[in-house]
Amino acid sequence: MTLTLLRSNLQSEIREFLKLAIPLVSAQVAQSAIGFADTVMMGRMGADVLGAGGLASMIFLSIITTASGIVMGVSPLIAEAFGSGQKNRIEQIARQGIWLTLLVSLPLSIITGHLDLWLNHTGQSEKTLQYVNTYLDIMRWGIFPSVGFAALRATVSALSQARPIMIIVVGGTVFNIVWNYILGFGKFGFPQLGLAGLAIASISALWGMFIALALYVLFNQNLKNYRIFQRLHQVKPRILWELVWVGVPIGIFTGLETGFFMVIMFWMGTLGTEVLAAHQVVLQTIIVVFMVPLGISYATTVRVGIWLGRNDRTRIKQAAWVSMSISVLFTLGISIAFLLFPKQIIGIYLDLQNPDNAGIVNIAFPLVLIAAIAQVLDGLQKAVYGALQGLQDTQIPMLMNILGYWGIGLSVSYGLGFGLNLGGVGLWIGQLVATVVVAVLFIWRFNHLTQE
Image (cartoon, rainbow, N blue to C red):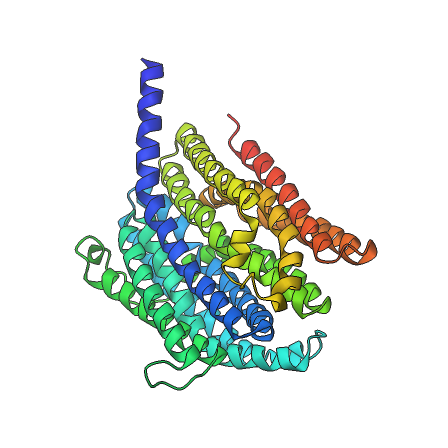
């Protein structure tokens, strides 16, 4: 009887997890397609634009992932309240999440518009800096809708209503890619705006997705019962503080993780334009793949949070292991594809027959192989972190992130890349070492918290 019950519970968990994870993963993959399309188009604009545009995209990604991470505290808190049937608390958390969006995004928009004061001291070429500043001056207007969308997405997914997120993001992605092409290359009578055109298309898509999701929350029959947009003028300091307590470490975590890769990119830039372009090609591919474990982690947070609300430790562990298993199986398949088809992956971005690209291709090839090894561990790490978020354990994982990436990872990257003169390969090996360390620490932390 016990075995039958366990099997039934496992099947139920897998079914509920996939019902939530598939739309969230699809949304993340679709959203990453924006960056993927941008990179492909940048590659057709030349190596200078590809390298500089990739750097600018990584800076913006670092900003919005940090800001979005802060408001992601909405997800585990609402999931717990949903699991325990506290409707009033769900409404209050969602409203304060909107307030937190304002408090986070407005100052960041101002800071982003003045990043040129810092970028002038990073050792990049004048042409690279010119492209980067052009892109960021436009993209800063997309910070508020991007963070606002993250807050609403966290609310909707925590209430197990994830499917519309996928539909909205797919629509926004298609819009973005089409207008990237039109404005970037000057098609159908529009001016050729290059990198600026890609940025204009991106912020238009971000605003469109935010407004669409807000309208869905406002008018959907299941969600409007929560009255999220009513009494928005009421600030609840205690709940706002709860969101900050859980969410700020998530924001710092994601910011530091993205910042780590940004530092690696800056170091790549000091090794030359070809090295930076090769790095961007492989990194963009990883970002697309990474969206699947990231979407899985969002679903894990919700499932673990719901079982936390019901105080069921056994089902918490079951939800986490289902997530980890699915994430590892997916990333293992991707790693095999990386190992079997490295040149085909590079060829997505660059013309392999063009002799001008030969240097970039040769540099990118070993990076793809290193990335193949890192994928499985990165997927595992992200799934476990989603479970830790569901348990509302965010402070200790943040410290583990600092140790793994900024302590060990950067040290190994610099030592191999510059100390032993391994260049880009050495920098990427350091990234791999950091991923291993953080994955091991997270698994230990989760096991420690869920011991009977």
